[in-house]
Image: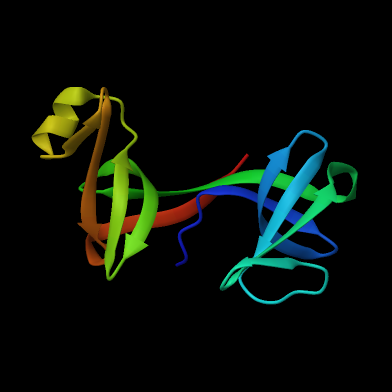
Length: 122
């Protein structure tokens, strides 16, 4: 499963990574797409009015690891970077998670150990 974390917009029937900016939305594509401007190799952008966007939502990928809830932040070579979403410091410490910031615990979890991977959109 592809890990998605951030804004996505549906424009003219296709979905793109997005970045809202007031009454405009920047749409991003990974390949040449009509009307998009290349900003770096493999990265294209187009700014459109918010009124033209069919749907704008924020997507996060969630999972269970070692029986606890996590948000999946990224993926690298068979591992997920996960952030504990249970809100209980004693549980995070028992799991041996890294303290990333005050109250924020993260770890690398083998994709093979992660269960119930799913997206949530708001």
